[in-house]
Length: 164
Image (cartoon, rainbow, N blue to C red):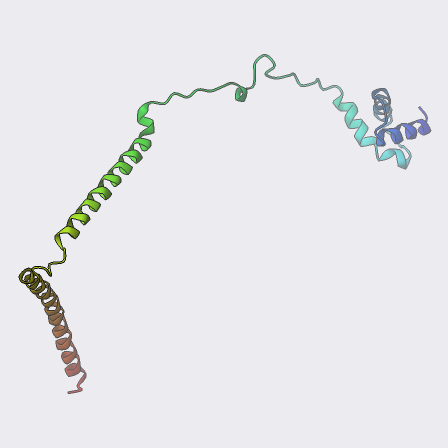
């Protein structure tokens, strides 16, 4: 083949207008010309030599043509009941929480009924006031003993530092 014909075929190849026969002619031409070529033809030589060398490699066989793909088949998974234990544990915890909150609500309602206003019975009101004040006094006295201990500690540190 002449170089002008090869240039024309290359132009058609680069424009994506060549046929398979023309591309085969380019492969055969470049496979047969190992020597010196004009500069404009040398740039395509490695490409078409590679294509010519790969033409001997057989095509890949079609794989898995006799059966459907694994992801197309429906899969059924049967699990024993003990594998889903977290569902049942969560249900038991929710039920326990509901029972606990209902019990707490009932106790709170009972406590509110126990401490009704007793002003209609002055003697009972006086007794409950005395109990509340004794409880307050007891807690205040407990804080007083702690403050006395801090006072002793403060006096001891002053003696050690020599301020007295």
